[in-house]
Image 1 (cartoon, rainbow over the protein chains, first blue to last red):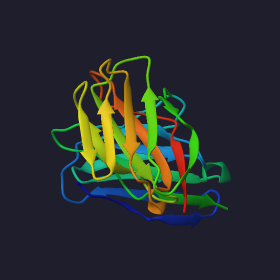
Image 2 (cartoon, chains in turn red, green):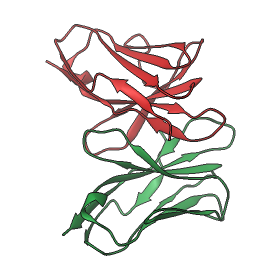
Image 3 (cartoon, rainbow over the protein chains, first blue to last red):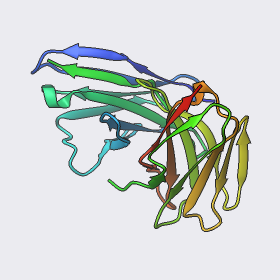
Image 4 (spheres, rainbow over the protein chains, first blue to last red):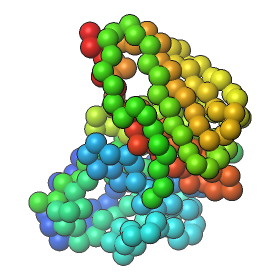
Length: 115
Length: 111
């Protein structure tokens, strides 16, 4: 299957700083990538859809100025958590849609802890 | 956001037993996907279903796309300890690229 790599896997940052998370499709080009947030023992919550070459589409209730998404190439999307606060601590996961298909492949996830 | 109803929520089974779980929706889907997530990891795609009535296997796993297009089932035969984890279904509604995820089934296998 297609491989999606997410980096870093874990990050600890101080409150007020910004953190960037990268999501790369390693062996295919992804025009559409998705960013999710997952709370403990819960399902995945879609935050935004990242479209190559255009602005991301955010879900209702997700602050676009807080969670900056950039999809500058067909293999890379980034999520930047700006001015992070402890309540932003969570597990963030990206996925990429397979070209020409309806399958979605996930990255390994990033555990963000804001102290 | 919208979620699929997935059941059971959790289950404890003995090694060697078969497992069944399902997802239901009030609306139809064009695609059903089944994932397994281990702690601290991203979900891994197990099976993809594209047509109503389709039955697809992947080793000990078998999944079916319901005839009504509103449900899907996943069966695991002869469970082993490494089957432990959380299983999620995901559906893709017609005319959209946004996947809707189930609430998850937490599986624990007792050796």
